[in-house]
Image (cartoon, rainbow, N blue to C red; front, side, top):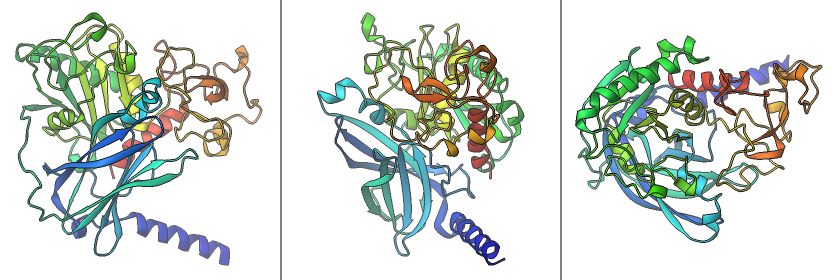
Length: 424
């Protein structure tokens, strides 16, 4: 009886800790915190760039503390007077991916990064942490300021019209996705709007989103570019576009991304959003997705709908790639002595924290590539860009091949958990 009472006490205490009274600590506005991230393969540093009054806060006013703990980085905001944790979010970055490439062993680079938080009412402190080699978050950077700081900028740099693609209700109580146009000229906005409808309809064809339509808003931003298309350095093609997207990111031809994250945030600010989707006006195969950062789609490619779903898995829930045979720029992305934080990958170091409880007890671990196991949940070797030592839940899924028609169950559960997190 004492044990039960003690457990109830711990649960109540953790619940109280997780719930922050929004109106006590925050105004109705949002604050964008921009910084520079510099380093190479084994070192990094952070430096302050600027803060921007980002208008109305459209995120959750209830789930202010991130209990998902996905991502390689974690931002925490503290009330300076009481040292109370009042906001936190996990995320990943392009810099973090770049650190695992061969180029990072040869040179230093700087990327601009940004996080948008509710606007504090009083003095506050921002902390940024990164996972170490054992997946523990270690503080890397700290910055303190006041809401009265007169260097907080109030101008909006990129003003564009927005429109509703799919609307379910109050943005504070929904997951808000914004589609932004990249490489579409003013004359091509009708084409962009049709593409937005296509990708919205695609999203709701896939579980778990089919049953979550009432929890999601989708917006479009008419962010026209001066030129149509995108950069293709390998073919000496260069375009003047609004967020400066490019193929050959990390010298991988199909990796279509942008290092100009400030411009992405400037454009996305024209609509409520927790997730940013950059639809690129190109038919060349490519795309990319980074957790709580952004995703890109080659909007005119014949496989665009499948690319979108795959990359949305990365961007929304941090799902890992389950393939291991493709040519990628990453090196040693998953240490084999550490359990990955991604919900759909395991090294078996701590498999109990993953999908073990969902499996048929008679299924072998690891699971052989035998035809009798190919349609069920198992532990199949190969994933996370490694043929050995990293395991995936199913023989096939949308996170391994575009031929697949669905996410696997562990991935679906992770995606649903994130959507519901933003809707409380």
